[in-house]
Amino acid sequence: MQVRKIVAVASCAFLLGTGLPLPAHATLIGSEQLLQGESAARDKIDAFLARAEVRRALAERGVDPAQVQARVAALSDAQARDLAAGIDQLPAGGDGVGDVLGVLLLVFVILLITDILGLTKVFPFTRPIHR
Image (cartoon, rainbow, N blue to C red; front, side, top):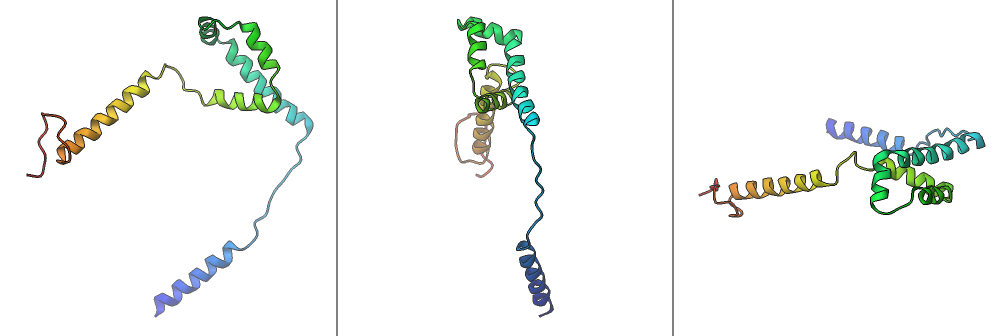
């Protein structure tokens, strides 16, 4: 009976606590800060396009760097922010070979485990643990 009372009091306290309003803090953003954010996105895009490997990859695909700069200049502010965020999410290097090898290794390990558990018989060098 004592445990029920403790649980009931704790539940009531938590339930009442979730209904309380939390303080919100808001500040005004000046136009200078907003413009700095926009120029930072465009600076990030320009720095990315200025890299030698990016210029080389564009040249291999037959893209003129001046045409790329003109298109970047024509982007809206929201598009520039999205593109700059996409640059941050790009992989650090490589052409995806490491990803493919990782997936193949994962499939191999899963098949090996299922072979050992006796669920499949893919590899001839394994024996199931259940006989």
